[in-house]
Image 1 (cartoon, rainbow, N blue to C red):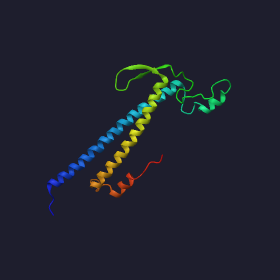
Image 2: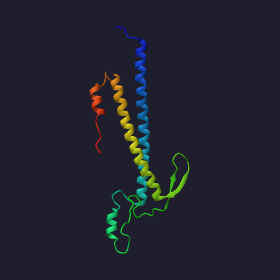
Image 3: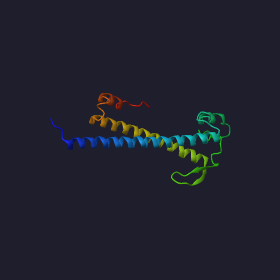
Image 4: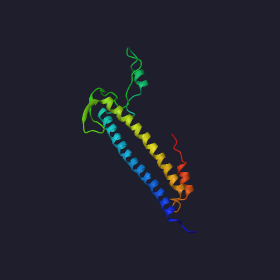
Length: 162
């Protein structure tokens, strides 16, 4: 049985292409995590400025029951703003630009919280894509000498519980 050099080159090119995609996904995941950490730092800074934490602000129901005499029945309380003046301007650097602008406090932290949710979704998507690519590379036989294929298949089949 003689090995055809052209087939070996094709197989190795396929392995290399899949491995390159895995490395790209990994670097994108690292960059995404850096952005998420910066976003969390900014939200923490805003909460410190407003002197609130996620648990220090009363729920809308608690505030509604305390202020039932002569006031509106429903009073929304933002978990980040708390009693801080939400219309007070806060400096913010525009994403993708080197410009600082004054934006209302509530708008800034609302944008950051939405970005945090979006980055969390993107992170989960990249993780699942990485699992798929690793499984495909394993099925090609590229990892057969170091990691058994059954182990990789069982790791990829794991599901996160909500």
